[in-house]
Image (cartoon, rainbow, N blue to C red):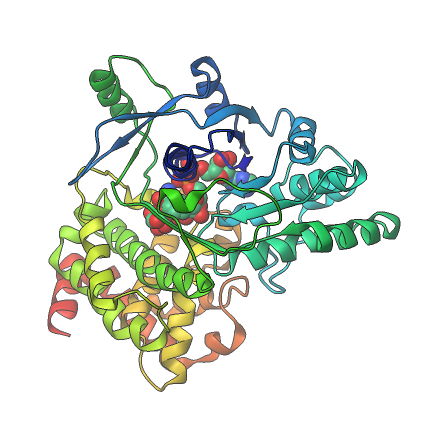
Length: 461
Ligand SMILES: NC(=O)c1ccc[n+]([C@@H]2O[C@H](COP(=O)([O-])OP(=O)(O)OC[C@H]3O[C@@H](n4cnc5c(N)ncnc54)[C@H](O)[C@@H]3O)[C@@H](O)[C@H]2O)c1
Ligand SMILES: O=P(O)(O)OC[C@@H](O)[C@@H](O)[C@H](O)[C@H](O)CO
């Protein structure tokens, strides 16, 4: 079962699962996918019996492929009780998730479930659950009551220690139920459910109408659920399963006890550079990540952020060659056929920048170094927030961020105002005047000198 049947799940998890079946001969697996916020993907897949095309784009692309591992797709918004029933069904053994960072409904101050969230509260009060964590907890509760066996919950979102985090949130939901429900559920979770962490990697942009037309042209059929993706794909999984699972290792997945290091490397090298390029690109009117990285100064900023800010502050997993990895990341970003937009990568910044950039910032500040390039990424994000009208800012905290903005658009006013957002920056970092000055420096260059100013400062700095 998969919660969050977006583009990524189809191009990654579904492909790995089908490949595992083909390579291992264990063909009894199939995925029930749940769309979370809209019913679009469920509606697209239904008349196609769950079949959809993966169109690889870029050097080394394989021919079009029709994937058949999704056997059912349901709209969680419209059929919440069916989601609970499916999680509780005996044939469900693994529950994977790609629900985006905001889908976890984390309280930034505690790092646990946001119990003040109205949707979480409604799920706790007993409606058929609509939040992902509510669905998981209620499904597991039904499983516990019907004596159904163990299950593994596998977060595949770009979050550090995503397994441990998901465990914390599901347990927090259980603990917030009335004691007569909380105690047996918590005990059952402890005995029957595991939450392995994973690192997933494949760039999968949102499918465009042009992509669908191109697939139709190549395939000879209209596929409304087609997805495009780069050829590269990777999955590192902690081997901590409570029940059966597809033999994903037969499809190239790496089972490792070092997932935290893989996830940190990916978030802080790849995803952080992605965000840097997205916000610099947005400031310079570049529509795609490949357009942004084609700008020499932006390429240099991403390369130097990885080399000078990230690598000195991170312990890489065994087997990962830093230079090769960073070079490969930049080559992947440059894939012009992918059309990964700066707007998509730059969306939900309040949910992403902390995870991607702030460990790098604190690691450098603690070592007495300036996090020069990570500060550039944060300043570019701040300017994006300050110059995008609230109703056009694609971010769940758009209203809060805009409420914090001062009347003056000057860097010296905007930077401290956004540093004051406690859901993103902690008080100690916000008080660090040297860091604030670095942000103000970059913000001013972007705001008053534009691309030419950035080129000068990055190339000669
Ligand atoms: N696209 C990629 O390149 C990529 C690569 C690696 C990891 N991921 C992970 O997968 C996630 C989804 O990416 P995608 O490309 O499929 O995006 P998408 O927009 O195609 O799909 C997002 C899915 O998350 C669900 N969702 C959104 N907000 C939610 C909420 N508040 N509560 C519950 N569910 C919610 C949506 O309904 C949808 O099913 C990313 O956020 C990331 O963590 C994506
Ligand atoms: O998926 P998002 O929107 O959370 O983040 C955008 C990208 O940085 C991300 O999806 C990468 O493409 C991906 O993590 C590559 O594996």
